Length: 286
Image (cartoon, rainbow, N blue to C red):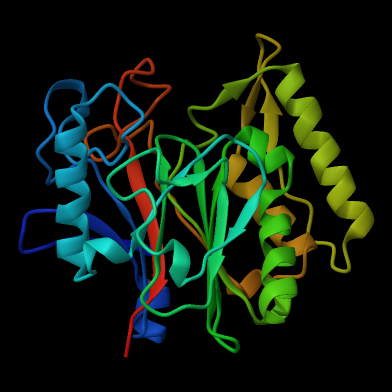
């Protein structure tokens, strides 16, 4: 069953709730925006949440405010970063609450993963084909969010985030609930030997350090033209399992951002001129 369920807020935002998380843990909010229900125009129509694309900044901030309103979050609790396709993780405390919500200059700099155990701090990351990764430790009440393009995936950002949660909060991977959100699927994602070489190396390195070996799963398939169809969602799932998350604790979407440009922005499908969706996760204040 698809874990991301479409809901329409009273203000018109159309959002995908991470239903297995939010139904089991009412204190948790997690999900993914669509491109629908905002004020942006043209190529960025309409719920573009990315300030780093060529959209009007005022429209983007208005969209982010609409998102916060739809989720019943204070806007000054919504925290954003400048992502760089790396694997650096930021521990977010209340001192960072609201960073980057209306300005790139005030965002968390050069970070692609974020963790917090502070209630009322809502983590946001931006996507237009890359893979959103969600983490929740219900024992220690900590959450994490990561942005995993092929570079972040090759750098095992999922493993880096788990290690940060362990160091910061004492998280044990077997306790973690994880989810893999809407992104470009193997159906639409063709890559070359360089990318596959990096992915193979990451999977081998994960194997060497793994305490659990998942069943063999096809993560890519060579095409007649010599290139490969790559399933980044499945690669990240394999890395999560090798890092100690139980397979039964991982939700994975069936939604491809490139196949569904009526619902999502897709950098590859739309030739690079497009908006960004936001993934979010956070623990509500009592």
